[in-house]
Length: 409
Image (cartoon, rainbow, N blue to C red; front, top):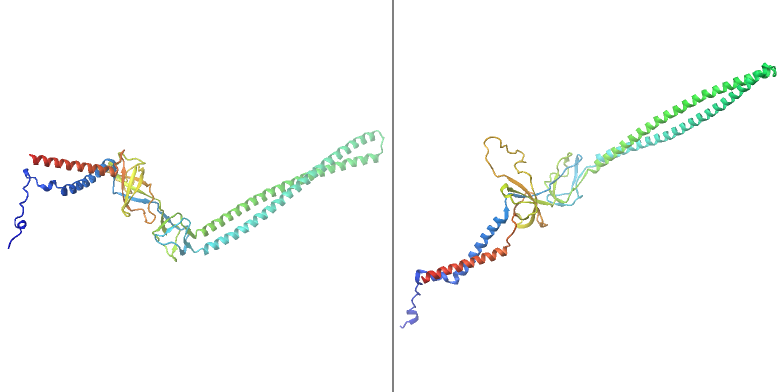
């Protein structure tokens, strides 16, 4: 049987190149993947180098936010709870109702007392008006008495003058004894009338003083009645305020957390029933003190939130004036003689420039990783990629040049 010569006599393998260099090292099937792999490694290395030169990062960072505790201002039994755990509520939404019966009864009682005090005040005002009239009447009577006294004084002066003339005429026997006696009696009667008018002035003026004293007492009574009426109004307002406190409303927009109240519970004043976490959050990053050399407010930050797997734009808001350990519950005491230097961490507040997603809950305590751009420049990713490709290409070209020289040697 004849065999195929091409099958029976295969061509001998190509001899290796001089110098012992394998041929596959120059093959594009090796060089292209090697170039791509080298470019990827260079891109990663350049990214780490750029970050080390322009960024400061820490994994000791957490989301912070305001936590508003909701507590009752009055004690009582809860008759309604209108919020559930993790529910989003708006400001002024009704959260909890406390039985208002006792407070409504107290408010009605205080209102009745206030009505009584108001009536007393009106009676005192009427008495004051009456006393004003009484004083005016007494003063008018006193003025009339003084006028009568002035008239009596004038009459007394005239009768006295007539009597003196009558006496002169009597010594001259010009008039009769009867006329003299009549003039003398008229003078005495005028003096008596003047004295009576003067006594009446004293009496009427004492009545004016008495009326004025009664007016002062009535004014004091009015002032007291007004004070009692105002006090009663204050107690009414206080009772109405307590009644309004039986309904607890949300103080801000946010999510309900740590709910610890159910219908039927008896709650005390100041007892925390639940907390509300508003959507406004920020980051507190504890950087090492050696990382703060070039850090300052306003610098750009990229914050990676672990729970979302995404990064968000932010900026440095402020740096705390002191380390975190210094403001802890038990600050370290270094004046003990066995001091060991420990790198301190300083809280840095970072605020978001980019809105967080509304469909995910981001609350206090979540872990984040902030990258603060403290350098004066930043390398874009496309520039790092181009540089990595260029360096990888240059490395491959150099590698081929070295192989060619080895082959030609």
